[in-house]
Image (cartoon, rainbow, N blue to C red):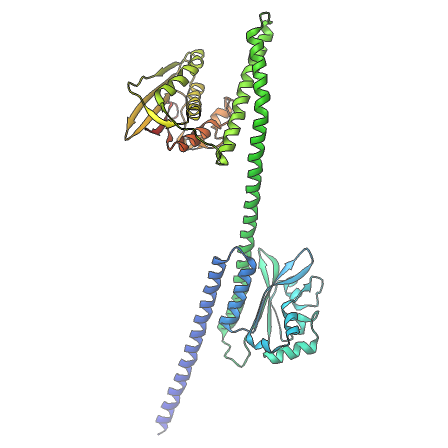
Length: 448
């Protein structure tokens, strides 16, 4: 009989322990689910810090059954600690509405060092109190605080500083369940984990907001930059064209120019031409980046267009005693294109080939076709381009270090503009090159 009683007692003890462990396991799972939910809130509502804070505090109260949860942030301008979000358990609904408003509107001056929240922030350490008055002393009397605690059965308040990169930015206050409920170690662990999770959530949101504000400002500055470049380019182009015209007339209409003066004017004419080209490039880029560059399409013979560019630039090749060859193509190569803009593309690419190929070098232009596309290949015997730099040259201001070092004139805008114009024509530009062995630029365009 004694053995039977012992066995029954053991069974009862085992059953109680299993019940307790199952209950604890269920609560642990609930806590993990709460932490996962907070992660989801942070990821889905990262833009709005108030939304994040309110959803987090509501989740903590509803899912974990805590009495009250506060998130307070520093208002450095007004030197106050102000509520970002407050969530209260239903048990607090029995409290007078005026008192509830006071609970929701808690504000603590930085200078109130007798307040336990300010102490937690200044010391960057968790504080714990069973006296609500230690938190609300600037709003409520000690008697009222005791009455609220009795009605809501609030036993303790845990006050944690919210710390981001070693700086306290606010405080997290949580009032756990009443002590009559099972209070396992995991609950303490959950309470200790929440401030870190909430700090990260607030930090991510603040960083995101700063990035958003920065991006908006950058976009505004970019618009202002485009407007300035557009206006400046328009304003500069007229006087520069006038100066160019007067220099041309002086050089070509005057019969008694001093040779030295003529030399100076020829240099001035060359520099003015360079400035006009730069201004035109700036205006084109402004239009490209603001998506205002429009194409006037017509069917043109691509070989004839390239031949016109070839004829225009041949004089420069002759000056450098370069072998400059355009291989004839027997058939018409019709493409739908903006003649002026496509001319600019080939002036840039062929002009670069002439500029970077040394004296007595060779530049060859030939055509190929296939799959409703035509390709124009411009091959030179210049210094070549390393594989690392072959993508850089199509970027804005993408000049190679060698060109800068050798002081080869240029702005690094020509190939960028050429690529953008070619893309608008639904074509492409590619380069094949090897250092010391020259380069081949290939422009591919769809045929009509």
